[in-house]
Image (cartoon, rainbow, N blue to C red; front, side, top):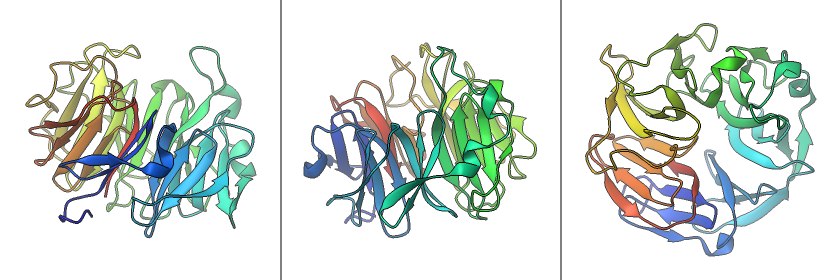
Amino acid sequence: MSAHGEPMMLVATDDGLFVGGADEISPVEELAGREVVALGRSADARWALVDGRELWNSDDGRRWAFVAKTPRRRASCVAITSAGLLVGTARAHLLRLDDGRFIQQSPFDEAPGRDAWYTPWGAPPEVRSISGARDGAIYVNVHVGGVLRSRDGGESWRATLDIDDDVHQVLAHPTRPGLVLVAAAAGFGVSGDGGDTWRWLNEGLSAHYCRAVAVDGETVLVSASTGHRGRESAVYRRRLDDRAPFERCQVGLPEWFSDNVDSNCVALCGRTAALGAGDGTVFVSRDAGETWACLEKDLGAVRALSLD
């Protein structure tokens, strides 16, 4: 929490890391001008991937220190899980931080279906998001390769979604074991049994190509557009267990964003919500997404955003 009792906000951009609250943010001096690609949170630290090659951490969100360099492949995402701190990389590999160095996780290299993973443009797939669940399960989203689940600390993996659902973010509910959410080209997906079965809940979305998902308590936020080019891009909200459709967040936001609000760029903590756009604009809400205000403009393109 910030000094004012509000959630602390971290904004990772192409031009550095910014920290603050729902009223103002300021640059982190140690990372000024650096490309910050991903953020993570553990019980006693915050984590950032810098330039796709370095892991940094901070105990207060304001003073940051280098931890370790990732070997060989560009890093794309970071999360704290039952297996420890995991980093996802290009070519769809997992690294685990062990005593200040990274170790490649060989069981994930043998995950079922790996030979079928792909990208539409022909490049190798990558790990796009990771989420550690309260019950110890680990969910890894490969783009494009669906969602893989481990219930034994990363020793074995099981595919839980069809590859062609094209998942862009996976997120385990922070307090409800077994409840898992995805933002995918197929829409907003929900599983109540740890990924064994899924439902697609797209009613109310103008289009169902989803990139980002955030949840806290009973509120869900998702970003959606007509496709990868981001046409008619917007953010939507709904109650998690209600049958009511999604509602588009409009008050204080552009009618449409010029591009997709990307994976990991929507955050929710209690009643405070935040979103970051590719043009470097950050918006905040204090009523769980009903109304919004612009917090900052002209940052570098936002790559990730967190509230805690």
